[in-house]
Length: 271
Image 1 (cartoon, rainbow, N blue to C red):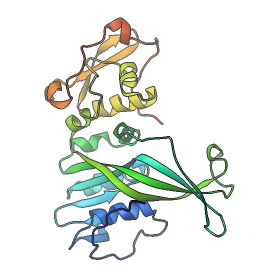
Image 2 (image 1 turned 90 degrees about the vertical axis):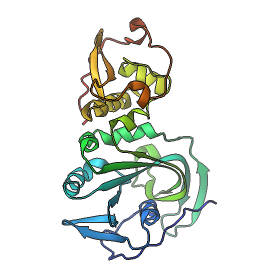
Image 3 (image 1 turned 180 degrees about the vertical axis):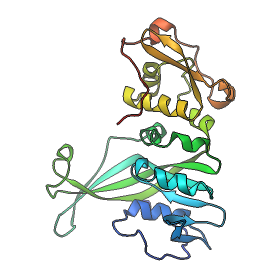
Image 4 (image 1 turned 45 degrees about the vertical axis):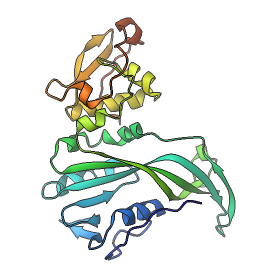
């Protein structure tokens, strides 16, 4: 079984370690180097890794929980946000009382970088803030489940009790809206609709709406009119050339082909 690489940690005061997942701990240790502080207090906030010139915050859950913290820290520091996306997951079942291994199988679900937009809707303004960067860390992981009857009905009552890092597949650093544009499909040509984006990327329409909402809020996209009731989007006029941000794709689809159903697309932040 592959194991995660670990970097040396110079200091830890134990703050914030309660209920920390194995995945969070492994990523934190991976980013911590000689001389760095771990779980240190900066401006009243506990920060995962404090470097001489940068703060590193690892987040394995929703960005809504840390958006105020990130904005406050960015007023005086450079901040790197680390977010893992599971490219491949193995489901491990353990016994409730003893922790004995009950089984292990590979999940058919595979994550992709565009999934980060589920969380970026909460912090699109950060990409217009100097000193901010986001590391998308594509990983292989184990998800440990326990049949304790307290979990989601979707998992038949199994609770997720831990996530374990097996391997880092790739890391992509995002610093601005133009970097986010590079996550869009190669075959997508503008102007485009949410329907076209969903089809080209193979993602749900709701996620496509979050993508265009985030890109508009961080200044990377402009609205370019409508086809029926579908909004059209194109690269922001004050941004870099589309060819510089996104690999060239196929010719733009005709309006009749990308119009889709006549439903209003508000682009509002999902609740």
